[in-house]
Amino acid sequence: MQLRLSNPIDLGTFLLLVACGLSIMGCPQKLKGERMIAQEQAIELAKEEFNKQGRSASDYEISIEIYYADEKQWIIWFDKKGLYPIPGGKHAVLVHKTTGQSIFMPGQ
Image (cartoon, rainbow, N blue to C red; front, top):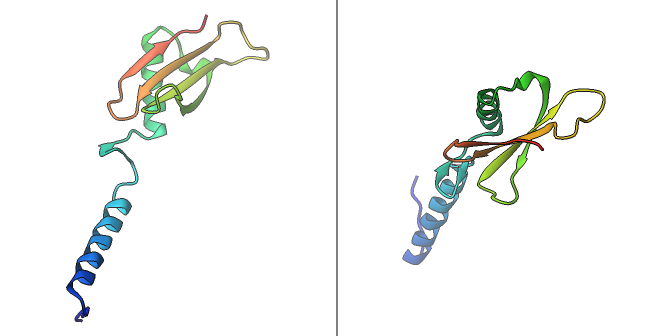
């Protein structure tokens, strides 16, 4: 198969568009060129950090969201299981999306 374009600029433009399209489709899990940690991985890293603090992650409901103060991090919330919320029973762990570094933030 031969591709014939009447103008050489058209071929260059075509190749540029193909290259851009392939680069966009080829890296859905990247954050500005870096590999991004998935939510499931972030939760596992947060559980490890949480357990290092002498707490059992199985005693808590776990949720995750983007940490809006720094969008390069996930914030994983640990809410103590039970019928009523316990004051100070909500803790968090920040997990950096590219490095996996985790920081425990205790409740009050």
